[in-house]
Length: 148
Image (tube, rainbow, N blue to C red; front, side):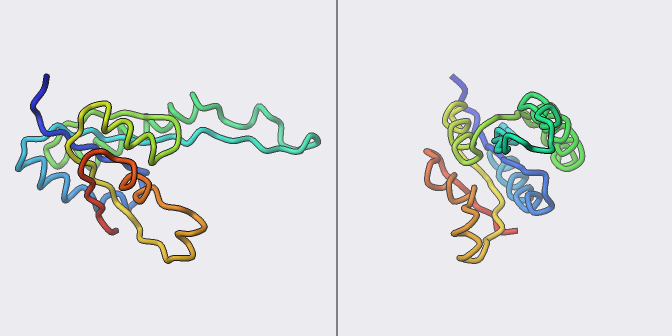
């Protein structure tokens, strides 16, 4: 059983997600933490009328989306996380982002999730929901929400 402090860092590859990295660096240095960078592919939902002009084969599969996500995650880690002197575990998950993030943290026994949040207005939040809020509600470990 590992006693290493574990941090989960979800990213959507946006500029905003970089805001969390300063805290990842501080805490990982202080705790000699194991860092897990993850990206969640939201499984595509196909809603097409029977007579759609878009052929079904033009919609990417979950496997295709996961492959693109893995390539993007590897680039993200190389360009932004490795430069901090951190060699993280990089993992792509498929499902609902908040649930997958919280479940992954529980699965690995994470001590903390560090997630960036945009802090939408109340109207935008009501319409769009919030991955960070979902993680806060579902996670069984500490969650540091960094405003970007």
